[in-house]
Length: 430
Image (cartoon, rainbow, N blue to C red; front, side):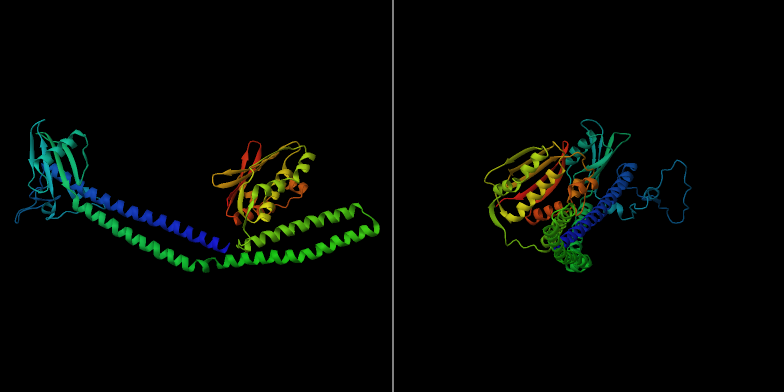
């Protein structure tokens, strides 16, 4: 139980940390790509506005005025400066920007005539430039990505102007930044995970201590209760021997039997949660065990006029503790017979499901519980208090059943089916 709780804590912390780092890493790299794209689009806009070249007397939105001359006043029709369009995270160009930028332009005059400018790039031939320009012009996109080039298209006075900006260096930097940030995130993840593993035992120690105290209390109280229960039962028998059986002695004996059964189930549950040893596991014929466990309930089912149906595959063997499996089947079938209404149905099936064994116990129910039925496996949970008192249930039998199944590395679930409930147990084979 402690190991399972510790593993669950480590998995939860690891999952949350992985999600946060993934979100942070993705956000940073997406922002980096977005800034790179914005920078390229700003440069392309300047090139398109100036017929595919950088202006000689404009510092990307700031006019360069010769010494001794006054800056002419801006006219209302003047285009907005580039610096006015940059925004909070915009690219801030400098005088070196025209010399650092690798680009080329293609102006498509007609279907067979183009004007090509490859003065600012050396890695592209005229044929490649024309092919790229024809391709992007046919796509009807005003801007986009073509391989490692960012392009922009606009209609000019002479024809369609296509400007291509080489982004290979920016892409390499983005890839390098992504690799470095991923490595840093992985290192942080492993470091935090190592620290969580080292300190997880200390983190759960208060909870483990409380759980151990509860288990110890249940075990000690159970053993202490057995003695007075046995004395009360013995005294009732002595009274019957001296004065004969009466309504009161029968009631005393019935209540002591119920109390003894409750204490036994509590002790069983506590022992199974405290010990993870599987040394008593042996291979046995589970089909025979299931058939033998349900046989005593046939007579009880007849007294309630239940429609009794069993379907058990012969020779199905598993590896486990036969006594515990018998107890698990008994508890499930007892629960089905106990809560099935007069004239209802009880169906029991034990079949092979792939490489596992599957036990299903179905019973009709006059009042189906609402919500998640897996809460039926919680200790002392009873969906119908009045009916539980009549049937003598304490709400601990199904908790014992789940403990037995989990101790055998299996899985148990409760589901609604038609007008009843079906309990499904999956156990690994031998």
